[in-house]
Image 1: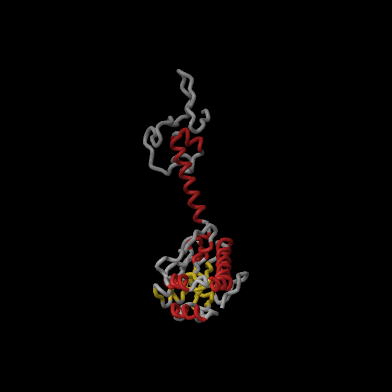
Image 2: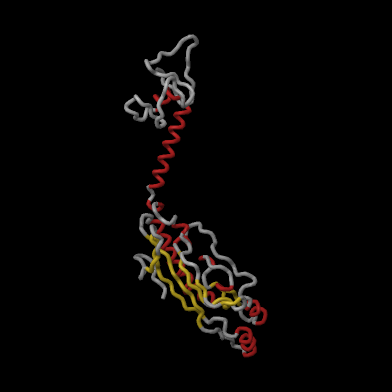
Length: 286
């Protein structure tokens, strides 16, 4: 019997029939054979080795090219399924680490549309610092923390901003609950003393999640920020009087803050405080 290449027609000399082994069916439409054939798994024929898978060449000669193509596609699909199921980071977990961004709903302190917010507490997962992660927060809304507009209009000797308590690059929204009036200088100190160290903590959580996919837990960070004191550093008496009339103590002198590691079980989704920085991670913030 001549070997036949998949997709290539069998060459035949006019007027001659090819030799055929006794009991061998002619190739015909896929899924049909002369005589009665029992239902069986695709790629197997009863009576040939107890139902073992046939070599591609034999299957091709008995069932046709289209049937061979279906068998190969089915085998590839099964192999892909097995390979995906064996990946440890995706097995019996609450999703991929890149989607582990906000682990708890933000808890805000007292706030008003004019004066903004006073505190926030939230827990973030490693996905907040995943490579290629898009900007997750939002810029200050025009109608939020509007006292800043008054300060910039009447106290122009200082640059006033609507500062995020929960950093917008880490998912913080630009709403009154999460904004507070502060000077540009105060915002700079807050960023260097707290926000950048917080980002480094989350970077370590993301690095661990990416490099050790089989670890049973993910690491994240729970942090809280609170306004502290009342800003009153205005040298000029006339400017000070104007500022105090507008501010009435709502502009913070600084902030109190803390950040601690938490872990999330991949199987149950339960979270718990770690108690100390995991080995190789930046120190917690107290």
